[in-house]
Length: 359
Image (cartoon, rainbow, N blue to C red; front, top):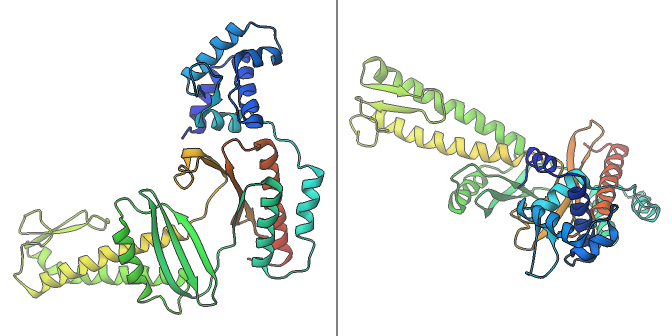
């Protein structure tokens, strides 16, 4: 993925002619879906240059990774990196079209009090206006949880499914802790489901914090005499990677069965480590997302379909991000039209939540 600083450095390498050629190739591709050739560009450029000069510029842009040539004799199309640079730096965003604005305003014209029904209507309106798939992330639900499940989507992406006691179901995407597997996620979910009934996500996190503190105190009490006698020593004390090293050997009590205290410390360590892992899962589950435009393979969820996601958050009356709306479509979306539509819709949803006093 091209980072903002990377995009700025690439943009600095382009003179005015290169920027115009690049912009027109991207705009032409977004409009037609077809490669753009040098002869076509020669007719449209603001300065008069030969087709050979334009071809040289396009080759330079291809060398920078901004354009690609599907066939040897064909024109150029923008790469994912090129689309990113265009969206971040060169995209001209027009105001929301009057007809689009009226259609979106009409969605919020009813006196419907149920937020879920209104958001479903918003998704339908977005799909109709943009001819893409809509994405609506509703405000996070805070009610007792009946069931929780983690689903691995990719090495760095996972989905948590929360089923609440009132029947509400919520899906959240997050980045799992490094090294977690589908099996470890199932174990975490099983552990949580055994103790989750009647607790909200916040209450569950608080319970785990309390249990982690209790386990740590028990380990301290049991290990104090061992450390004072020189029989054991702490390594990385107080850190997540802490270890109690026995008799100077760098092993975590794996070969020692000399006392009931040592065996109990071993079990407490195992329990502490598991609770720390699950507590980290719960922390990540509650995290929110910022504003992003995902293009092609930049997002693991959409890389196989070659799709893009334009998404904008919406806020409640306290200016806190509580959800997001967006549109999923091909990489050659009409970004100049889609971006303001998504942004305007997010503003409407935020006002709707504020008017209804939704948290």
